[in-house]
Structure formats: C-alpha cells, structure tokens
Image: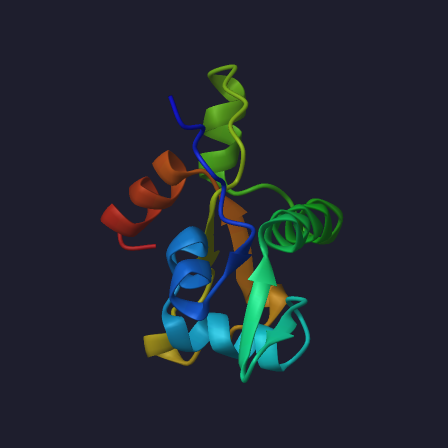
Length: 120
C-alpha cells in the first residue's frame, strides 16, 4: 500500500484555500513578505510549515493585541481547543478592510462559519 504524500509546497490557490481567503489576499500576503515563500522556476510557493508558522504568529499577535472574540470565548467556555485553520477579516474587504495582520483573526472553521453566518 502506498503512503500518502503530504504537499510540501503550496501554490497561491492552495494557500488561499487553506487560509479561507481569496487568492488575491493570499497573493498580497506573499508579495508583501508577510507570508514567507520560495521561488520555484518562475513561480512563488509557500512551504506548508511556513503557512503553519504564519497562522501561529497571527494567533500570538491577536492574543497580545486584543481580547478574544465572543466566538473564541464560546469555544473556550465549551472546553474546546481547536487549531486556527482559517483567517477572518475583522472588517470585511468589501467594507474597506485590509489584509493587514491587524485586520485578520485566526479562527477554527466552526467559529469562522458562525461569525460569517451571523453577519460578522
């Protein structure tokens, strides 16, 4: 039986899907140097470990810079500890928000879905 091979280098679309952001947002994070990448041929790729490090950095920045959102508090109150797998724009891009780290909050899928469904 063949072992599953984990993708080590991700393209912009894969990064966008992993962070639950648009490809444009992922591209901005890469080209602004916020998300480390490597050049492979003519294309930029993000190492899976760098993507994880990026999310952990955002999580640490948000914990020191602000109080947790009501959803994080709800997950904590329920005794659930889930990894942040998605990025939520505190102020939606459609409403003038940016892709700057100050406007991004790492959340688990459940919390992100809840916020989005409730107009957040």
